[in-house]
Structures are given as C-alpha cells and as structure tokens.
Length: 239
Ligand SMILES: Nc1ncnc2c1ncn2[C@@H]1O[C@H](COP(=O)(O)OP(=O)(O)OP(=O)(O)O)[C@@H](O)[C@H]1O
Ligand SMILES: [Mg+2]
Image (cartoon, rainbow, N blue to C red; front, top):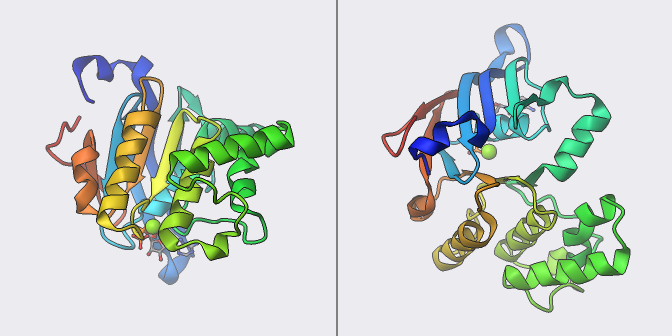
C-alpha cells in the first residue's frame, strides 16, 4: 500500500538507516547485514525475499529489538529503539512487536493454549482469561479444541499456526513473520497469510514477512530483495 499518503512520516512504522551486523572478527568476520536502509509503513504487508544466508533473519532480529546492531539505527514510530534501556526494550518487545520465529520457539512442556497465552501472562493478565483468549486465537488459526495438547503432538504446520496465534494475541502494531509458510502446504500457507492480511493488517499495523515461498507473493503490498546483506527494492511499488 504505497500510495501517496503512505509517504508521510506519520505512516512510517519502521525506518532503518545504514543498519549493519557482523559476526566474528578479522579473517573470520561475516557481515550478515551491510548498510541496509528500509522504511515500512503502517497499513502495509511488506515481504523480504532472498537466498539462504543473505541476512534476512539477522535484519528482522535487529528491527524487532532482539539483536543489537553493530552500526546504524532502527526507528520505530520515530523512536530509536537501540537507545532504549533494557526495561524499555523488553517493554517494546512485549507490547509493540509480535515475532513468529522461523523454527517456532514453542515451549515443549507448556500446553498449546499456554504457549499462546504467554504474552498476556507476561503482561500480568488473569490466567484463566488469558487461556480462554488463547483458545479463541487457536480457533482463529484453525486449531479449535487443541489447547490442551502439547506442541510435540502437533505437525510442523500446526506448530507454526500456534506461533502465529501467540504473536498476534497481544495485537502488536508490528508483526514480523520469519518464513511463516515454510512447513505448510500451499493451501494452508495461503489461508494463513490471507487471514493475517484480512484480519490482522489494518491502518495502524505493519506486517513484515520473510519468505522463500513465491506462492504467497500475491499477498505482498511491496517486495524487497535481500542478497549478501544488501536490500534492494523491486518494481512492485518500490519507494
Ligand atoms: N549468531 C551468529 N554467529 C555467526 N554467524 C551468524 C550468526 N547469525 C547469522 N550468522 C551468519 O550471518 C549470515 C546471515 O544469516 P541469516 O540467518 O540472517 O540469513 P537468512 O537470510 O535468514 O538465511 P535463511 O533463509 O537460511 O534463514 C549467514 O552467513 C550466517 O551464517
Ligand atoms: Mg532466516
């Protein structure tokens, strides 16, 4: 959704400037993200595509307050997140961003509903109300009645849907999904992404999706390409 109105600073959800991350030093140094500039707007679903190892997860981790950059800046709603103190950063991760990890990161000893309820529990919401709400979100992602099961009993695709339910339960303004459809069959993957677009995306929310899955490209408002740590726009509504 890169209409003329979307160029206003008021619609800028994320602005990353000259963002870099490297691992190791000297001859073994790997530069995962190299001087990236990125603007993502409220109201848009932005895809980042690129080969394995091109730096996509590293970039998302820096944008979502998980991994501190070596250089550059990430502004979310105009605030530089990497100048926040640890408490403020924890608050940012809990309230402003929802992150669906590439490998789910579900807690194996918690039930499915408990996994989904974690963000609410961390916000000190009432336990049984949180579990009720978690069960509603499980229903939304097509897992009605599975709240009592342990994640290990679910398929990879089902676990991915649990992770999505957990990311959206606190209704974050920024939702980040790292390869959300990698382990889903085509129909389920499209169902999940169209659900996220129709029900979760709105004028005050921004959704960033990293994907290899060309079958879901049709849902993107804009697609950026990542290669060797660099980000380039395509002609699809590029800025
Ligand atoms: N913690 C780390 N320590 C050392 N190197 C790392 C670390 N994290 C990432 N890298 C390296 O940084 C580069 C980018 O990794 P990243 O995981 O961001 O790629 P990606 O595009 O997400 O790949 P994939 O599509 O396979 O998930 C890779 O060369 C990777 O090996
Ligand atoms: Mg990755």
